[in-house]
Length: 295
Ligand code: URA
Image (cartoon, rainbow, N blue to C red; front, side):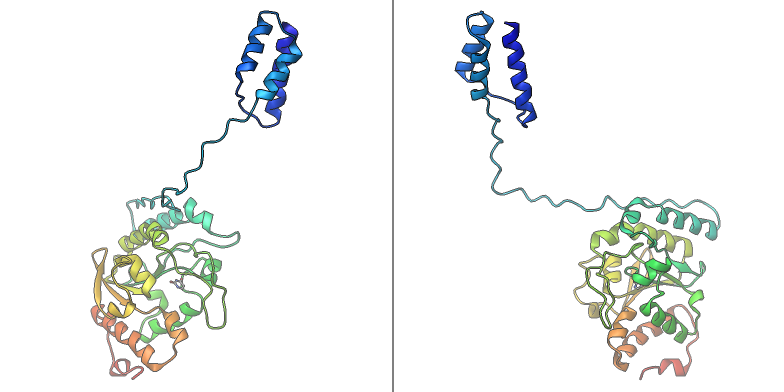
């Protein structure tokens, strides 16, 4: 009987190596097994019976229509807690937190950087874009590419230096480029609502540190990231108007990349009129010459 059982276990092992994880035993197989146990049948007959009865248990049929489960791609937004202390210390802690964020790090290609805001920690004006581009993720600083260079000129036209405002983007990483950079085009896609929601606590923390008089949202992605994606359909509905974010006045205007694509005086004047409102609210001096820019 021992030989028969050895033969049986050998056969089960062999079946296992072929990927069979369970076997069903036919009535005949069971009878043969019982017969062996009673010492009435040869081992080879048992093994033959079991082998012929062994079938992989069929997988249950797949449901035709899968239930629609929307899987979030990102974990919930981080909780950013700022330490007590002076602005510089709190800002350093915020940058360290943003740069150590594992979700952000997973989105940054090798050799590229997480991008936090920069500028005067006592600035009256805090300007917000949607997401870093190629140049920004390379330098680790917002608004250093073509849009940033134009933004620096716009800030100059307001009578300020770049270092006298605070510049930030909603996102701390560049959304994967799905749009190749082409002539006159910036090679990155807009961030998703979920991506912006994820990064928003870092921006809120920067606003809390700087305590600016007002905020400026540059472009529709940034404005939707701050106001919610259902707040407007076209930027024209909200641009030039005062809204509110984090308890501060928020001016919505075009992103400088819009001007890079539309070089007309009319486009420039539209943004400039929004910036004149910003200057007024921030109590910046405005000359007659400035009032007449792009007219
Ligand atoms: N656009 C942004 O929103 N941020 C940058 O840093 C550059 C371009």
